[in-house]
Length: 591
Image (cartoon, rainbow, N blue to C red; front, top):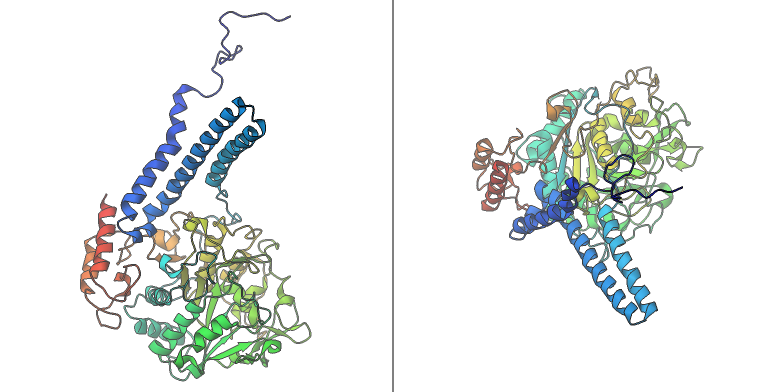
């Protein structure tokens, strides 16, 4: 039997007397998103409209997605309301089909605005087994564990459809040149490119027993690039994930015009792939680069590229596949520059400097110049604390042992090793526009892994245990797996190859040396605090003094200091444009 109660209130639970649905106390939360979005839009317009370069500032990078989300939400709300009203009028006119269409449009507009604002949820590709800021291994380099991250949105301008990303129309060579210069100077804390290179060569020669000497012409240098997508002559497409011709050109310009390396002493290679025309033609466009050598897979040689030749006198031993051999262009060189790409990998989780050396191995009875025999000995599906072939590959005396500099090209990262370039959500749905540099192979890959695992646009494949090789490399002398890593089989185990740790969080991007809590990684960047010339975490009078000391200098002058060249785009002059950017950041920091 049912009884009718007195004063029945359908908004109140008859059992507990508590109100059903949302309490009025919290109704103000309904307005939180639109008000925040409107204020963000106003703030963005006021700051960026007078000076578009401010769009790269940290506060505007935070405001931009909130403002754009508000605009999309408002457009959806207005469109849905108009469609709903139109549907009501048509219904009253007995035009049922048209009314149904308008009603469907109203629903779709609401769904569209919500789905756009929701976007892809911020997610991590994997959860590391080691806690944040827990360094392992011994840091390498002039400034141990230092990784430099240079970001400049003006380097990339492809709209996704017109031409190709790798054309000079869509990638600014002058800006990339400036990024390369800053990467070298920030890495070494030197004030000119020439001093930066001299510091790199001297530190390398001292640590390798060659004495306190810089580069001596005509010592040979090889540059390993990652051409994994190009396994034939015609693999380049408008959006293909390839190395940036402009980044390679900027490096060659430094080596030939700053260091004085003759072109005949420089080799660009990927022994397992082909080096396509966009790179080849870009290099050959410079009259000073005509004698630079290109080495490719033997079956793809021709058109100015020569075939890789295996050096049977220098074997590489691993715990899994048969003995491998390295290219003679590597074994006959004194220095190697590892110029990798920033992107995920469907087998290994990430492909950075460590995996870049996959293009350096020859297996006589297992396919020749191919890394395929290594694929099952270190992928992301392997458990932590297990053997990884990348340790021996990077620990070999002719590969990691010869590497002068590690770089990661992050101008246009691809979604994975076989995919197209992709805009990054964490960069305001824009291109990554970044270059990384380090002397520590473990540190730079640790930083690259952190960037990849926290980027929703491309971290689907950064799963499993993609950082196992970093643990093994950092602790190669006593690895968690217990493996005896000895790539030359000379009875001498590898020592630790560098330092590994994960940052504190994706927003601050701080490592233990940044925080002053450990001897791990130091991430140095111009992006986080623009104008902090002395790297003390503040923009103040001390930084103004640094700027004043470099005032009116040009690149090559004794007073030149590249860290003060913060105008966008960089113009290789310390002038009023730099002072304006500095003053704006100083005032913003004081607010």
